[in-house]
Length: 112
Image 1: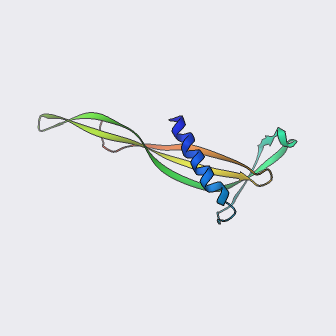
Image 2: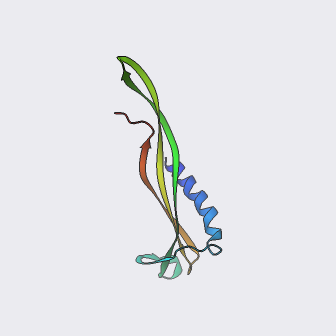
Image 3: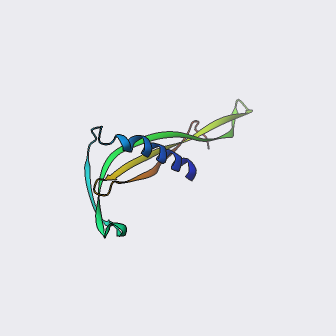
């Protein structure tokens, strides 16, 4: 699961970040005093939210049993994850960071 999120985040960052200046995004200024980079002489990052993307990723399937007219039947349920990825950019240091969050787990069939 961690590898899958890492791959999705990496792909998203490498496809979106090079085109940030060419595309018009809604820019949201964020000042976070806790983001101090010691390598840059203690200067504070000025993170700008560049984009948000939602992805639905198929994860797994499992089998469940139902009773229909006193007959036992087996069905397959596909599990997918809805993932939200937010990309941030610091123009002062040319750094990027991304946050990947699991929004919800979706089952294709309703069962117990």
